[in-house]
Image: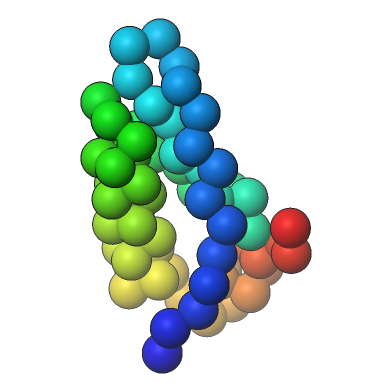
Length: 62
């Protein structure tokens, strides 16, 4: 299943911070692409390990 989520990426210091507001998950990287890829990986891990109840309770439509 594929879902579309928001990724907000901002420069912070020497790197970039990426944030998914729908699930309040963030990551970082040295480049925009790395920050986006790290956020994607963090979201994948969240969906693989979180219970359905946790996924539902954390969802906040943006």
